[in-house]
Image (cartoon, rainbow, N blue to C red; front, side):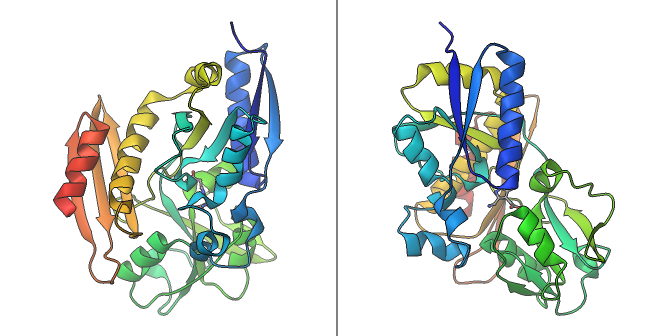
Length: 309
Ligand SMILES: NCc1[nH]cc(CCC(=O)O)c1CC(=O)O
């Protein structure tokens, strides 16, 4: 018996709402009679824009990296929502056993984008350029590729960060291509804000390694909720899931010991997965780079992890 109503939970940021809409469209296509109710939920990460993202978890006592997900899980637990719609890269790799990631939509592009006042991407940034990002992964890779660059913290949701990028404090910022495209940016031409033109330079994943799960929308449900699992299954994209499973498992294995900045990406062709990772030592210095391939996402994650240990 098909359920009559499903309640999805989402953050209230512009990007989260676009992702909720994409989910609702997919559900409407598969289940024309299903009533989809949207619940907008504020997370710790949305409230605490006053401190650096890397500090929010500590300040707020949120377990691990759940700063954008904890309140959605509380709503799942309280059964006020059935499906939490997440940017998968914000979801911790280890979940409480009462929850599970039941599926993903088809993935958007995985690259990072340099958004800068100068054209020509990373190589053409002026000497000593100031680049805004709150991601340690982006910061480490930036400075490794361009040692003269100065990284400064930049918080806020995507539209806020785009507006700040046009201000005098920054020469450039970094954002995910997926978020920019979902919010309607055309990366082939500059975006002009208050008379300042910002240029988009997507960075190939083998040049600038993305985050695990970047560009994927994941659905978290109560582990025992078979009805919601069936709903998710209809809009699920298995090829995306195989890739993000490999990437997240690799991150989970690394996270066991520390909070290392890590970039990782996969490709999937005819059931064959290739995965590459760039891992920066916590103490600084050269990153380790590795590659694994195979057909089992968990196996190749383990193989890659062990080859870098
Ligand atoms: N942590 C914020 C966040 N979470 C997901 C995205 C982009 C969309 C995605 O990667 O799925 C962003 C913004 C960004 O990194 O530019």
